[in-house]
Image 1 (cartoon, helix red, strand yellow):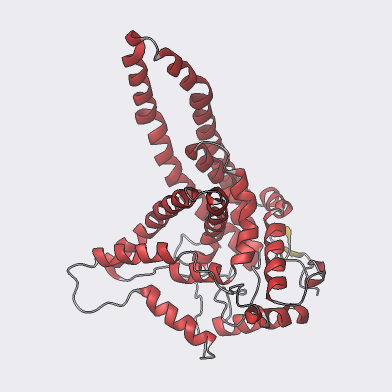
Image 2: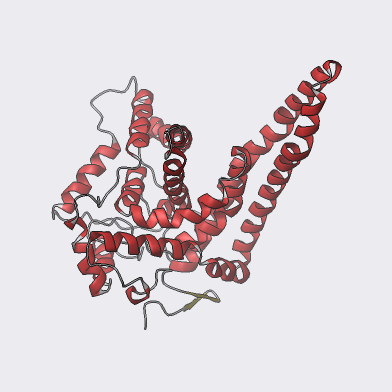
Amino acid sequence: MNAYQPIQRHGLAQTSSLTPPDSDLPSNLPDNGLAIHVKSAWVGVVDSFRWDIAVRSFLADAELRTNMTKSLLLNFVSLVSIYVFDLILFPILHAARSNSILDSSVTSVSWLYYSFWLGPLIGLSLYLNGSWCTAVSKRCFVLRHGSRSSFQDSRPYRGIVDALSASLYRGVMLVSSILLSFCLAQIPFAGRLISTVFLCWIDSYYCFEFYWISLGMDPSQRTRFLEDRWAYFLGFGIAPTLISCFSSPVANAALFAMMLPVYITLATYATPLPTHPSSVIPINPTRPLHSRMQSSFLNQSAPLQSQIANLGSLPWIPSRLPIFALIMWLNDQVVELIRVGTKGKIVPERAKNELIYDEMEAGAPIPQIVLSRPKDSRYID
């Protein structure tokens, strides 16, 4: 069977991945590191526009359809309320400020709106969107890999204090990303472009994060995986970033949240390029990690493999970009602050995983990690 031929499962015609054969990629480029980066970026762009996959999944599976519809409706309500205030009420209130008698009333109305409507709505949306996006990702995972596939949470740190640090990780990354994006935008001339490119990687990360968590990848593995394939994720992130970058920050967040279930679906079926021996994302979750990685690499077409081998041929084109270096450093500082009072010298989990990656790239044996199915009713059969 052709690797890209549709597969029937759960009544849904699916492909084993969104990524097209190498013959479908642009072929008029020199055979060097630049070529494979350009091709990877192009594949990322193509994968981000495979909305037919999301539509077929939505129409074919009732559980997926329910969660995606609830997320769409909630974020639509949030978006409408934001635009009604920004485009209608706010101009009226701004005009009323010219009247000193009404000025205090205008301030009170604005305070009431933000405190008792927009603020609680954003908080509720964050909680429910996280729950529904997790459900969407779980269902897509099962639809792609089958009911026997494993779905487990990633725990980057252990213990009670470690669990707290894990729960804080998402918040630290979100705040750090927003602040870093704002700082990049202040760079003269090219700041806005640099900030947008950075947001492409951030948006790609959030689109793939749920799927990576289901594969048991901790934060350091997720960020390293993206940094090793920076060109692909830059291409994949262009569409969701452009969709959510032309309004106010709150409206942009609501737009991104509205589209996130769709891109989570696309991410589940995507195969980021290039694939190389130090890859950590499993393709078949029912097999040991070392076997999956070897299979993933060997199944690539010969021309693409030869180009992957040449990634380091152009030193001015890095094979890895440390996009999340500052964010991960901040996360480690938060973890160390939480660990105050613990005994013994503790090596951050990220440092341990960096050593594992470096050893794998140097040819060391790859650890065997099997995603065993947990006995938990929360996991979907």
